[in-house]
Image (tube, rainbow, N blue to C red):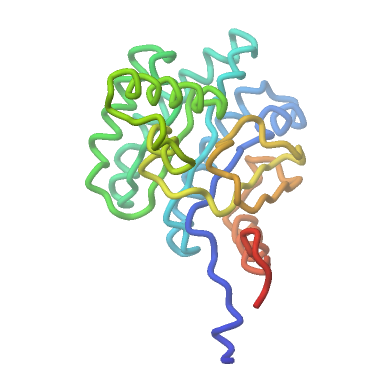
Length: 241
């Protein structure tokens, strides 16, 4: 066995629950939205770091279906931030050959934001570098419910035989149907829960719960987490030969 045989491949698809923006701002005596702006700046660095780390797909949790419970001021500020982020980053994303997709309940967002999302997806669809997927108004249970509804509609219309439905069928109706399942899911800020994120897709993902708050999640920290992943033994229910 050569030295190369000991090297395990890194994750091809990394999903990140970007948590801790509000706490990061509060620790500095600033409003929560200040932390969200700092977190948005961090996204660019992590996206740009992906090619050097062998990460082809990056999925980030921007706004959950549960986040509507936050104050009206914070929600409005986040929606404004998403619009500015798309407008400001569009050129850099194209220049860096990044393909952007959005997942989530899009009709639940305002029309201006939806229009900007559509435009960014269209203008980057020819990019074949990093695949960046942004989850907005997203919840794993909501996604599965919407997918099941579409599947049921196809059954009712005679397009799908109920007897043919298996665990390979539902993924074709999910928001992520064109993406591979994540290999690694990272949550920042010290919280150890998945918060309704990619429930179906992450069945065999590795998880890393780290104390670092998202605005402090530098490419160096990212590289360390990737390195930890390569040292894990992924057997997918099997045993070593």
